[in-house]
Structures are given as structure tokens and as C-alpha cells.
Image 1 (tube, helix red, strand yellow):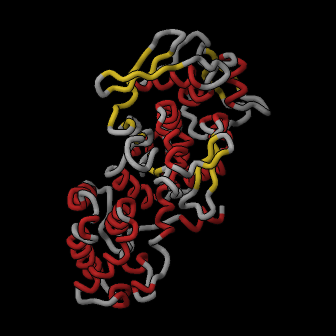
Image 2: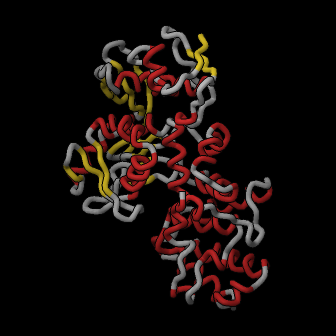
Image 3: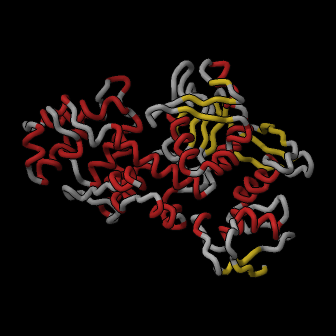
Length: 386
């Protein structure tokens, strides 16, 4: 290790290139010095720089594989990489060294990776980034319990009819002929951290378009991916590996969290005639209630509002009475809502509704989630004005 004092005009990328060579990774310097925001360097700041010959310190063999593969797949040393399968294991092999590691499992038309980077861990090591994107403590609580029912930050799925799914909410490329949520996430990443988007995706010909911030199209080398033939290109193992690598980056992870909580903007805060002109935010305002609604919306978005409306009716109340009522009213609505959502939609009802609800309910007993009315606090206004 050696010490370096930050000077005017320094960036982590420039420092990495100067001390570690053209193949140096600034993320390793950031990790060693506990830097969560690469734009936060201060003149006079002391940095510990690893020796150029020292291998990066890693947390597990799988992390080591992905980081080493990162150096193999990305410029400037575009070393060839091959993919083979042994049983259900998908193996990435660096052709120049022969190094090979399992990074995913095969299933049906493609593969899947459960991932190793958990949101609960990111809440600790990425706390500075969460402050930067202005996440409230309530929003973090809700995200933690909801993501537990979904995936890891570096989770990948290419085996179903959505072609490619990624991250804690498994945003998808979209079925053939349809837009998907993954392009909207990538558009958000491109807006917040354009250099990261370029590094992980842009330099390989990926671009996105999203008009509403919710869904959009992915394009590859200037061609919009619309048809089955187009989207099948993203089932290739190299794309799963690239997304997995991106999912290990703290900046990309922070965008995942803020993009995930912004899903509430689509259904929670907007008045609707189904609820007689009220919004869900006026009716169910506990952290517990919001976590249940978000969990439902990720799984069956069109069911949430009508299911809540039915729960209110079953409780013998009107939306106006709920909005003006007590915490007992909210508890009753939630009880009826959870019963209804198990079968709401018939054959297309929410997947594992009861099991998912119980996982969320357990967080109340651990103190990680509040059932109290008005306990949910959103920072959406602060983020929109930033």
C-alpha cells in the first residue's frame, strides 16, 4: 500500500490509471478507502493506494471471479471469454489464462443467478449514497422488507418470456412486442450516472428510451429490440454476466434502490375514482401497509387498488371514513386486504401471497417496520426538486 494526497482536479479514475496502470480499477481504491460517492473527493484527502501488482481483496471466490472477469470482458484488454455448461452450472472461462468459474445456473430457455449482494448489506456500506439520493428512513425500511421477497442487487434471469430480468425488483426487458421496466431503470442510471452507464452498457452498443420513466425500449447497436428474435439476443450469457457485474457496483445499486421506491409514484399517491377520489396514501399510511402494497404491486400491479377497494367494502367502511378514521380502521382494512389478495384475480392471483405477507409481518416484531398509522414518511418531493 502507498499513500496519496488528493490534489485539485483529481478523480478516482485518473488516480487509478496513474498508480495502477491502464487496467487499474478505481472501484478498488474506493473500496479500500470506504468511498461510496466517487464524486466526493476533497483536496487534501489521504487515500491508500494498493500496489499495482497486488490482487484486489475480495469477500468471496464468486466476487473474485466476477471482478477478474470484469477485467477480461471490458476494455482496454478485451480478452476473449467463453461460456460452457456442466450439469446446470454456467461457467465463464478466460481464454488467455484458462481461469473458469461458475456464475449462473441454467433453466429452460436461459439461465439465472440468485446473486450475492443483498440490499440489507448495501444499507450499511452504501449509506452515504442513500443520503445522496435522499431516501427517507421509512422508504429504506419498506425497501428492505419488499426486496427480501424479490432478488439480490446482482440477480439475473434470462429463462422466461421476459428475456432478461435484473436486480432487486427483477426489472424485465418486456415480452415480445412490448416495452419493459428494465429500459426505464437503465434510463434512470444513464441520467444519474452517465459514466457508469457508458462503462457497463453504452460501450457495448446498448441504449434506452423511456417516455414515462416506468417502461421503455432497449436498443442494441442502433436497433430497437422489439421482436422475439431481437430480444433473444439478450439471453446470451455475456449479457447476463455484464448485468451481474454492473449489479455489484455501489452507484448502480443506489440507483436500483431509488428506482424501486419510485414505483410508489405510479399508484400510491394518485387519487383514483376506484377509491372515490382518494389516494392509497390517504388510506393506508403505516410502513407495514405500504410494504404490503409495494410487494403486491411488484407482483400484480393492476390488482392493488381494486383489491384495497374491495377490502374497504368488506370492512363496512367507505374510503372517506378510512381517511378520517383511526389506526384500528387501517388494521382492519389490512386484515381483509391480505385475505382478499390471496385469491384476487382468480388463476392470476398474486404468487405466494400469504408467505410473502408473513415475511413482511415478521419485520414488525424485530422493530424494522412500523404498523402505526402515519408512520410512513416519503422524501419524494425532495427528490423531485433536487
